[in-house]
Length: 102
Image (cartoon, rainbow, N blue to C red; front, side, top):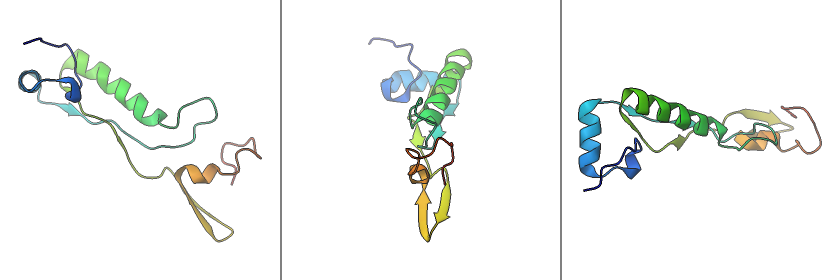
């Protein structure tokens, strides 16, 4: 069987998973919101940063990195009787250079 140096749960064979977990019983779970970070960054930046950090930790200290989860809206605003959640908060961004246009 081919051994992998991967730390990603989804890439490990059952035996590799058991060996990694026996060596260091830690599972990292990247979490993040889908939110506006300006026009230059991906909407999933928070999870991508967490995934990168946990990958470094797992490679240096051991453990496995679970598939990331996007959770919750990042923000809620009520304007003119309308509720805006998450990325909808930035609906006016094309008309406003401000980070929080509402």
